[in-house]
Length: 123
Image 1 (cartoon, rainbow, N blue to C red):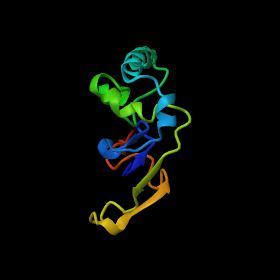
Image 2: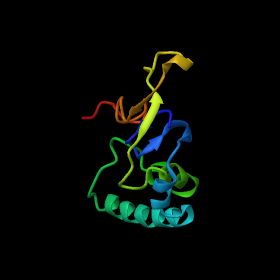
Image 3: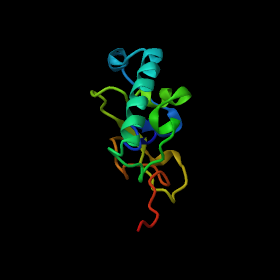
Image 4: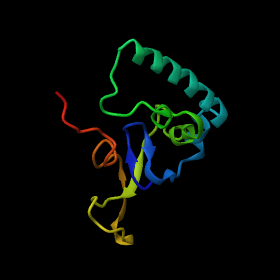
């Protein structure tokens, strides 16, 4: 993919990726994966209500939980054998140019895309 981030969930920005057939064969079928995500989201919601964890860093919403159309964004990174690489080596303030692409093991920048972690002051 162009850029890989492990947080707030394993994903490639722009939803572009390439993968071997061998890796994809390890994944659950997309519809099965989506159904499983509903079960996981339900468990996470109950744990959140029981205050077993907080949502101070990331919003607790369908995108983060991989619900509905968002399950597709979680799907390709949904196997423990994932070995992500990306091709986007530039920093945030650089312009996109073809000479900035270079394949590398990911992640090679911050853990989450800019603006995805709440860094507001807390008391």
